[in-house]
Length: 331
Image 1 (cartoon, one colour):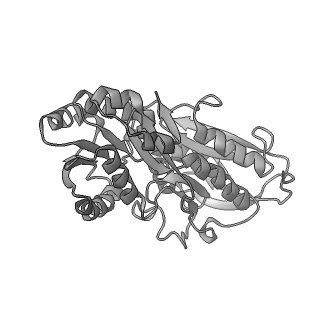
Image 2 (tube, rainbow, N blue to C red):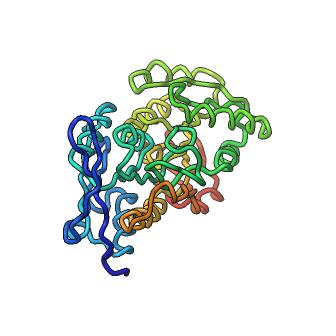
Image 3 (cartoon, rainbow, N blue to C red):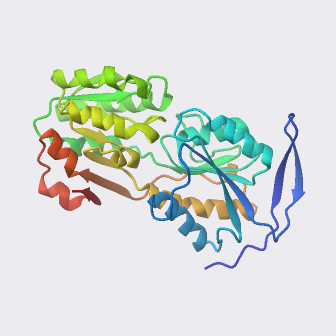
């Protein structure tokens, strides 16, 4: 383990409503404050692998929670609104750094400050969402780990074809108000025909519309529901997947929260590994590096997650070759 950093960091202090920033010297014996905004309260240890991975990554860098840093956790109680207010409050309280695990949280932090460093991890597409202008040169006060790889959607549809070899039409659930989805949908519509699959666009902007949008799909020729990520899925994936399962639609997810919500098959970046790597960026910033000089990194490892309970409910037999390759199987 590395020794506890001896470098004296500069602390950004926000003063008053004008948010004027003054640079001060940070006492070496005071724990650094990391602001974290979320839809949910902090989980207990072991409940969510991604948080445990971040804390493990911090320990690898020589930091112990409580001794070297404290997490200032603010949550919205599972409600979609409130991230901006929490981000602004943390800025006013003078946190030293933001750590964000969702695109929505990172965007709220960016709206709240252009000075305090922000490290994100596992976000959908930091360029398309407007978090950074480019991966190589993020500029500004944000950097971190992206969950996007150019080949991911192609791999997901190959897996879908293995799971459902007779599938001819796939409904792609997307959120028109979410800019990231537009680019992803364009990619999917370009690659799907090569696999003999038609794409049906299905718009869904909010959780309240699930009951009106999903059940009717079960009465069409749609063979599966492919779920593009949207901010509200973080806290409502279970409702979405339940509605699709009741409509006898196999669900293909792209984020671990889709798997947590019960999606039949999910393939995406290993977000726990990303969070562990993000701790290295936190360490470098604490030692004086600027976020603008740290390129956004892309995933190196990926996860195949399968839910056999959901498969049984929709009448799909998962091929043994997929089960053998799966990183996690819910039975």
